[in-house]
Amino acid sequence: QVHLVQSGTEVKKPGASVKISCKASGYTFPNYGIHWVRQAPGQRLEWMGWINGGDGGTKYSPKFHDRITLTTDTSASTAYMELNGLRSEDTALYYCQTYDYGDSGGRAFDLWGRGTMVTVSS
Amino acid sequence: DVLMTQSPLSLPVTLGQPASISCRSNESLVHHDGRTYLNWFHQRPGQSPRRLIYKVSNRDSGIPDRFSGSGSGTDFTLKISGVEAEDLGIYYCMQGTHWPTTFGQGTKVEIK
Image (tube, rainbow over all chains, first blue to last red):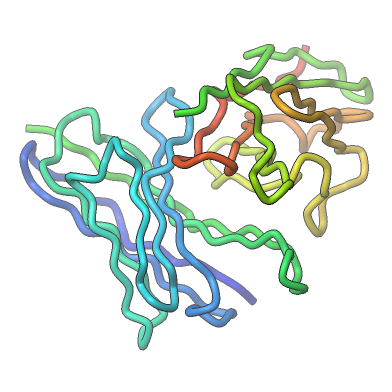
């Protein structure tokens, strides 16, 4: 069965960094990208960036491009999201997601982690 | 960024009755490859979002056929032919045509 398992809750002070992991299982990790999406309390879902599970290529939302770093460890089928310069507005539930539309002949699918809560507070 | 606007934001429903959610974008969502990357997600309280519909009208595996998606260009609709209790929660539209991906603000479907 396919899963994305995320690391646990984080509490950080303003200005600190956080690094969240997302371990994939049940599918061939290099074949699909990992997206990172966050959800602040009462706010809409917000796409942060994407990393290619195979070659590590990235695309970042302009809103986060100067503070976010996405990486992978393909040997561990794990993706990481690091966010620097944390502020109170970064308090949110952070999700990793992978999906495919099936355009290349495979089955369409959509898979989310359960989310990692990050609280930024002094 | 492409702005996605959903309506209504709150949708009181009677179980068994149909429901409809609108999603509009401020730019056409037709990609230069000819496809339209408009998806619908459902999120129950305390759970991760789950994709229901991809590329306007394709139901994901395991999604009941009471859910249907339609639309084109900038105007899209999600319909539930008869709402069941498990359908309550928040629905989001999402566009993946233009970078960065953006989501609607969500429509909360609740019991009337």
